[in-house]
Image (cartoon, rainbow, N blue to C red; front, side, top):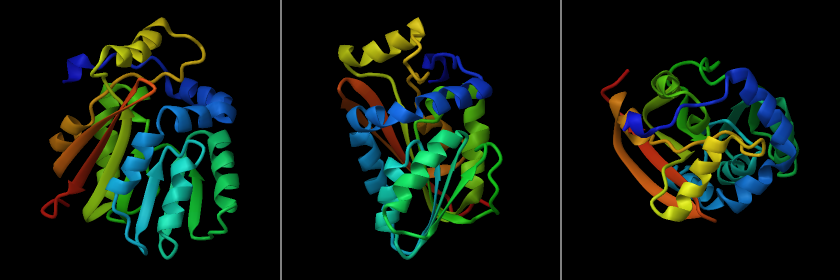
Length: 223
C-alpha cells in the first residue's frame, strides 16, 4: 500500500507558511469538500459526555466546536502548527460559550501530554500532507496519549474510486499554488501495523474530493 502513496512535497516550514496563508479561506474546503467525512468522523468517535478528547490539526475549528457541543462536561484539547488556524478556532470556540477547552501551538510529533491521557484522539487531513516515513512515529505518538481502549479517528484525503476523484491527485501533481498540498493516503495499514484493533475504514466523495475516515481502538494489552 505504501508504494501507491505519492511523495509529500511540502517541508514542515512550508506547511506552516501555507496554512497560515490559507486560513482565511480554509472553511471553503472544510464545508464544500470535507463536511461529509468530517461529520462522519465525529459520529464514529462516539463521544461520551465527560470524556477527555484531543483534536490534532484543528484547521479553522469546524470539528472542534462540534466536539465541544457533544462534550460539555468533559475536557477538549486542540493543537495546530498554524497560529492563524488556532486564532480562527479560538474565535469560533468562544462563540459556543464553552470554557472546557485548551488550544495549543505545537507539533504533533511531540505531544505535551502524559501517556494514557485521552479517551479519544481525532485528526483530520494531516497525514495526507506529511511524508510516509512520518506516519508510524506520529500515529504512535497519538497512541501513546490514548487510554487503553481509547479511540482514534482519522480523516484523510485518499485515493479515488471513480474517475472524478482522480482530478485532485492530478492537480497535486501539477502543484498549483491554490492546492494545500494533500494527496491520497491510506491510514488503515499503518494503524494496524502499530497495534490498533478493530480498525475500520469508510470512503466518502464530496464534489469528487475523495476522503477516508478510519477508526481504531487502542488494544487493552498494549502499554
